[in-house]
Each structure stands twice: as structure tokens, then as C-alpha cells.
Length: 276
Length: 276
Image (cartoon, rainbow over the protein chains, first blue to last red):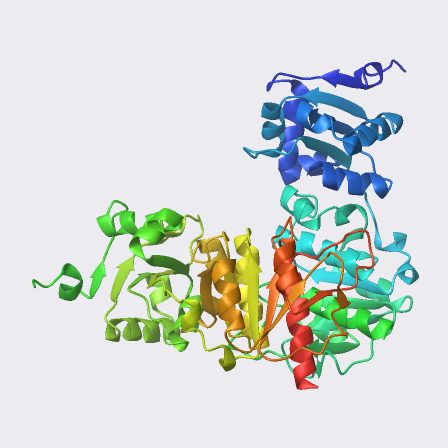
């Protein structure tokens, strides 16, 4: 097989906004191009360093001069090259074009999307798993990943038609947790049989009947915390299939919490029970 | 004084996208126009109904035919007219222009911005107050208001240069809590003397030294929960001035939580201590 251009020049310079690789990579801001390429884009030295520390290296690393001078950037450059990726010295204008922001970060990194299936998960490896159903908001999604990392969860299972976890906004809100948390996309019809094929307590945050106060339940590991759609909650059948339905106290006019907040309040309760 | 057009026709119809009132109200999507007018915009029957139930009525209520038929819309129309506001029957195109969204809600309501000062607050009226310092993200701001409502907080005090709480995104994320929670904007130099002029425990969520586990502290009412800027945290001097500095356990790679999540985890701990 003939060597590809990538093998030839693993560190190169791109100045032109119309460079074909730049044009191709900027399309990763759109979901259909991410799907077609199996790639996604993350911005900033901090997130790329979190990824490196989790053993994940970019396929392409774009840096402006300003970003390339940081000691952590040097480490990242070396690791990227050692991992077979390509390092591209470029301009702030190209980085802005890639990220779609006026004040782009000095680093944009392109990663392969991992494809994790339910059967790839070792459920016993973590005491908490977050499960979100038809999650719509990418900020909520990224925030749930970040919270999952904080509470020592194993990952996030996205049920049915949720927003794309590899979009720029979700990746940014995850603050790097997209590289440390397992991420699975599945349908409820696959999830429930998989769940019941092993140990695990399914806990639904539920606004309907037959609920217990979320502090009155003793949670068992692994605890799967199920959060419903932001505006509609979850289907009644999902709540009915859960081992327990819980609610947080609501003292005001509102009847629900933001989805990422509900996930965090629940997850810290489960964690607090374990550590006490 | 001559009667104004508003007094003449309290219910009217606007079809034209270039109507002067439409042009004026759509500018409320920009902060400087909100400041100049002392007005802000909220979308949707649900939020406008929360406002009405909290005793807050719009100055102008724009409805498309589709939205005007709902029983709650009829109640809202009657209350708006009784409160001296103007009801405007309009088209989906005008509502889209006002809200800046393709799929606008069938109701857009314009409210006067309340001007609440620290000295207007009755701190004893609620056991919890949220305090956020240089909050940048309007989604986080709205989510904190929503959480405040849920935990029975009195309101949100925004310190220093925070994002505008009356922007469309913050109002939307609040899910109506912008009408039920007090909202004060102040500088730290005003806040601290005001706080110390009465009862209140200032609790800083802090990533630095001299912290206690957030569950090891017995919180005293009223508890003021201080959350720092999303990327930088709070200045050391603010943490030092707090009565207690607390941290949540962090089991993973990340060293912090999303600001709205941290506020919620803290606020539920304070609430849980009170109700147990």
C-alpha cells in the first residue's frame, strides 16, 4: 500500500482558510458529517489534556503559535505524533473557522468517535451509571458527563433519540469527561433486557404516583439513575419498569428540576450513602 | 395629559412584521435595549402563567391564534387587560420575529424588569439564598433560579459582572422562577457589609485549602450559598470572608462541578438538613 500524505508529513503547516483538510474538518460541526466521518472536534488545551491523560489522542491536532508554546501543548504534540496523529501548525483565523467562534481557543483537536455498545460495558466497574432518555439539550448532556466523572460513575447511557453527545456544545460542557466516561447510545428495548441480564438497580426520577422520597431509599450498586426528557419526563412504562421511583422535595411553584441538576442531586445522594 | 394609544386600544391586532411596536420589542433580545427600556421578554404560556400566578402581569401580551384558544391563555388575557396591559393578536411570523426563533411559542409576553436592591430583601423570609459571582452562562443562571424555587430559596444575588438575568436564554432556563425568586445585582463591596448587618451564614464552595466536606457542616438559616465564576472560581478574598468553605467529594479526574450543579447539590444538602 502506498503511504498516505498523513504518513509523509506528520507535522505540517496550514495557513489557508480554503485548505481541503480545514474545509473537511469544519464540517464536523454538523452531526451528519460527524456520523459520516466517525470523527468529532474538541477545543482547548484543557480538554485535549484530559483526553491525553485518559489515553485518548487526536487524529489531527491544530495549534496556533500562541497555543503551541505551553508545556502541556508540547506534551500533547509529542503524544499525538507518537500515537500516529498529525500535528498542524496554523493560524487563529483557521482555528476560528474550525470552531465556528470568533475567539477560538488556541487548540482544536479531532478525535475518532468511540463506538461503545451496552455489551462493551463492565457494569460492575462502577457503582453508579447515569441513564438519560431523549435528552435534548447538549449542555445538559455534557454536564451529566461531567457530574458522572465527579461522582465516580462509569458512564452515561443515552436512550432513544437523544441529542448528539459528540456535538461541540456537549463536548465543551463535559469539560473533558467525554473522554473519561463511557458513552452508550441504545434503545429502551435493548437497554431493559441488557439491564436485567445482570445485577443493577434501576432508579427512575419520577413526577407521577408511587414514588418515594429520594433520601428514603437505600441504593444498591450498581445504581442506574434514569432521568427523563427535559420537557415531558419519561414514558410511564419506563418508570413502571424501574425498581424504584423517587422524587426530590420541591418546595416552590416548580414541579421539576433541570435534567442535569436532577441527575446530580440523585447521584450525590447515592454517592453519599456509599461513603457514610 | 392626552390618552396614549395604549389606553385607546388595549386589545389590538398586528399583522405586519414592520409594525413599530414589533420592531421595538424585538430589540429586547439585546441587553442594551432591555436596559434602556426597563423591559424583558418571556416566551410561552407556561412561563407567562407562572408569572401570573406569582402576581406578575405583562405590559404587552402577543398571541397567535393557536395560543389564544387555550383556557390558561384566556385567563392570562383577562388578567393582562385587568392589570392595564395590552393584548395583541398577531401571527406566528411576528412571534418568530420577536423571539428570534423559527418555531416560536404561541405566546410572547413583555414584562417590566423589577429593580430589587439588597435592602429590599427580607433575608428572614427564606432559609436559603443563592449567591453567584461573575456568572457567565445564562443557562446556568436560569437553572439556579429554577433550583432556588425548588429548594424554597428566597432568591439569587448576582455579584459583580454577571450575565444579564433578563436575557431570553436565562428567562427560558428559569422555567418561570425568574418571577418567583428575588433577583438582586450587587457588587461584593456592597454585599458583604449588607450580609454582616444581619443574621446569615455565608458558605463558599471552594476548591482551595481550608475546606470541610459539605456534609460535615451544620448549616444555619439563613444560609447564603456562594458559587464562583464558571472557569475561574471565586477570588480568594471572597472565600476567606465566608463563614465556612466547603467542597463536594470529587471521585474522578475533574476538580469541579458545573456551577448550577454545584449550587443545586449544596442547596439540597442544606434543605435535607432542615427537613431531617
